[in-house]
Image (cartoon, rainbow, N blue to C red; front, side):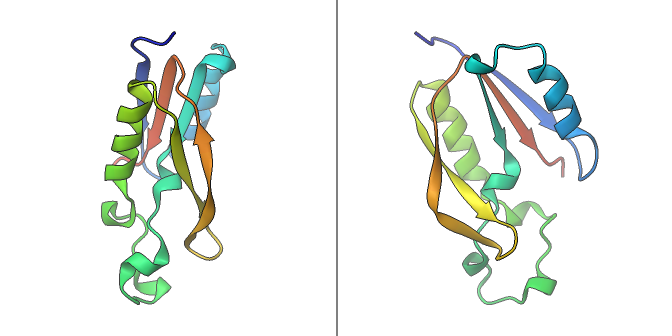
Length: 115
């Protein structure tokens, strides 16, 4: 039974190597005990921008992401609760109606932008 999962945060701007670092860490861990949460999955749906044209939306700005939901999901996983992670479609700038079920694990790696 999980008691106190280890939570790691890997931060950096676009192209800074977050994915590379995450892969190197995963190479050394038992993948059955790890969950990786990507901040990218928490982009807000296009409808959250009140009709603003796509070319006027700064997707590198913190307000483009629903970080509060990511934080809540980390809390839930820490409390041994399953989460329903959003699935974001980068071609339509919308969240899909289906979600990804993520079970709690011993290690939680959070990849996020560094603003």
